[in-house]
Image 1 (cartoon, helix red, strand yellow):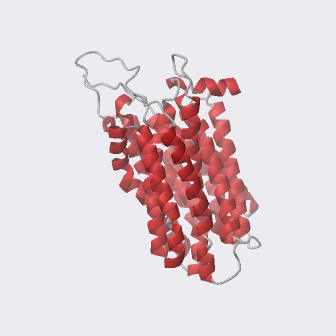
Image 2 (cartoon, one colour):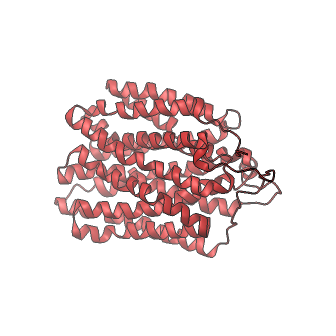
Image 3 (tube, helix red, strand yellow):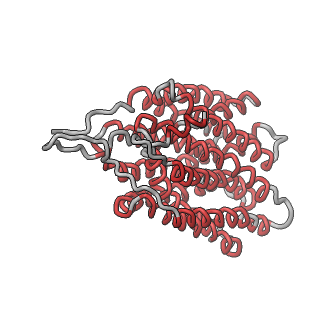
Length: 414
């Protein structure tokens, strides 16, 4: 198993990329943790501010909206300065946004908290624009999807730990006034901000290889390379990524609401721990997925997993008690491979255009800004379980990408 993993991060000429791979993989954990804390804040603000589910959805809108606005600038920055400087810049933005939560506890307004999350999002955009494609080229081309899924398994670990920390330090703070509960947000963000600065320092002192995506491409003189936006598989990947993130964010955002409404005996804090268990399924799915892809084509796995999630979401909408809760856990397992695999399939064969194309795939994360608000509105006017029709529809689109939209065509037009 260890030898197999090492072979995934070794170049064609036998050069090892172990240290760069470990450092870049740490980034996946960091943004997984940042994202999963949002799902705790979503319920927290409903409780202490008395806002509606639709309004609380603006927490995700602030974060994922930052991805959309920062996507192209991040891609251009990466193209000019390279992956390493892009990662360091992203880490510093991330840390700054996290430390902004300390003054936020004194300002004590919903809008200022949204500003903190927006700054964090700008940093995360740089990290994802760099780390996802960088991981795919740190080894043989044929194992790119396996490699990115292996790195993304640590993203799942961050998703798993975030709700536990948030449930303990934020939702677990049941004493004092609403203002004190508001202040409880500072500690987890101070911890993660300090850790992010440490990782930034390691990137500063470590020499990383700047990989040229044109290596290995052989073209006949006079051939004109198609712009990345003219590749059908890339356009389909952007669409699929938009709806995948929309589905995942919607499910994460209202998981606690769904559990507490379906199971009245569950408090918000206990539901947060249950969400951590869902992310354990997510994490296990990432690890197992990177192994299974040795035998099953990535696009086929996406299609099958999306089909399973369509059925699972139907059970959630049906509101069948524990059966629906179990269906949610199945959904997390099947969602695990979708983001990294869609990403790897989307940038396949794009060569030197990979950095810019990656920024558009990261921008597609804006789907996470729209879905929670829409789901929250449906829940406010109808019921929480009916809101889960939205992610169900998203998985139908992902199924079609895995079945058809992933196919690549030749990279030249003349």
